[in-house]
Amino acid sequence: MSQFVDTLIGENVEVATEYFRALMAESNLDKNSGGSIGFIPFNIFFTMDGLSGIKIYNELTFDTSFLPPGYANTLDFIVTGVDHKLKDGDWETEVKVTLIPKTDDINTTITGSAPITQQIENYEVPPPNEVGGGEGGNNSTDPSGDCGKASPNTVDTVYPKSVKWNGPQPVIYPATTTPTVTIKLSEQPTVPFVRTLATYEEFIKAADSLVNTMIPGASTAIKKRVVASALAVGISEQGSGDKIKGFNNNLTGVEASGFKVFAASDVNGKVQATEGGTGLKKFYYSFSSLKVGLIPLVSKIIERNMFAQADDPNQWAWRYFRDWNGYGARTLPQYKSGELTDCQIISGNESKYNKALSAVNQYSSFR
Image (cartoon, rainbow, N blue to C red; front, side, top):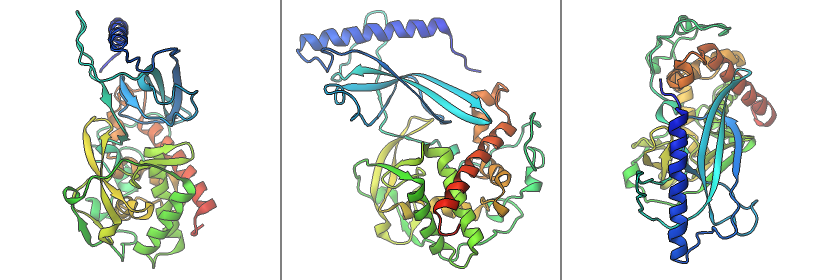
């Protein structure tokens, strides 16, 4: 298991400090201050829902309108600390960001140390095992605590997989209106990166409309559960306060080429972003609206029976953990060290679903 070594951290901090001083000296010689004149460095700490893929020395993008004049356009936000905590059955990520003056690209090697390469990350897309992931293995022993109606050893019997997800259970309500227009990512023009922040109400209204399109004959109860499941996934993977974050109306990191939509105009291009976890820069679909941007999410929820019958948070929690996340949380260091158990993950998932269900009961037309 990887561990932090205090001596190495101290040495890296010293190297970074000397590198920064060298950059400042060179920029001053070139009479290009890079925003360092009168600069008072400071740190920002924030806590959010658990998110993997954030790495030390990543650069984050923020709305800097709250900063004093002279700071907003002259600073880089560099991750200098990441910590994960389990609190009340919920996974939280604490991030420390250090603000440093912007500098021009300088390829400088400081004597006695290795060159430092800046990582520019416009956006972190959840890694593959967090956006519909693989099936994954189920090799865990029964963890301590209460997993609800199922356990790691009984979940496939208690909540059988759908036939479309290599299981015995028929799809509860098949989509009657499905997308038929295939759009190849490689054929799309590159468009600018545009941040998307959807409120729960906006997300729910878009999902309501899409569900009405795809399963118009379903009962109100089934439609409500599909929408609640979609929002719960959004909260789990891309939740930020009371909003779901994304880009170009793409809230789930859709990148698979050959993706189908209702009309060619549903996709207006492709946008480049960085995938969390792998650090790879990839192209993703840019959608014309929130509604069509939710097509892959809602389609998979219907195919995998990943919506909780009878509004049961435990059922959704297990289906999300197994059928959507592919047991991806088991790759976390906390899980491998025994600090995080299956039951704690299930408990955290249940709280996300309850939060989503509460919002659906408030904003959905299916409430």
